Length: 234
Image (cartoon, rainbow, N blue to C red; front, side, top):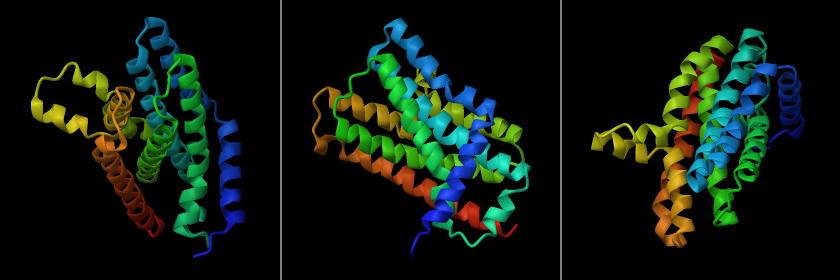
């Protein structure tokens, strides 16, 4: 299948113009940076920096992506996109590029503001890209099943709490089963892997973690495509 660069670019440029006019989205994007500054001043170190970075995945990757998709539904422009000649892959890439770039920029800002020292740049990039795919997939699904931007805020709140604040939730839970489930969340796997690398772990020691993150990304993409097909013909 040959992808159309012009179709992808057109979708991306439309999202860019919509983003520049949406003050709610722009303000929300700044939240992870606020956490990065706050935790840095508190001296939270690596744990605080990773919390801010994981929050960036949730906010820029999932929360903002869902709001942008839902906004198109409110304006009745999404149906035209779903019924257009653009393929599923072209629509997914076009609708994801802006959120992906925003996530990368916010993560870079979190790293700088928290003075986080990346233990392995190559592995950090790999883990980040996998997580970006996962959270953008989750965000796209939330946007597709929501009728309005306000509804995404309501539906997306559990995602924000579970995926963005898992490390905080662990401190108030004693049930071992729930704690074990939390450990397999992408945010927790991401943090645990980088902490292990900073302690000197080799690639072979973190293969399982990378595999878990990969499974999350695959499931998110497949679920997004299924949701997209269903909504396309609704």
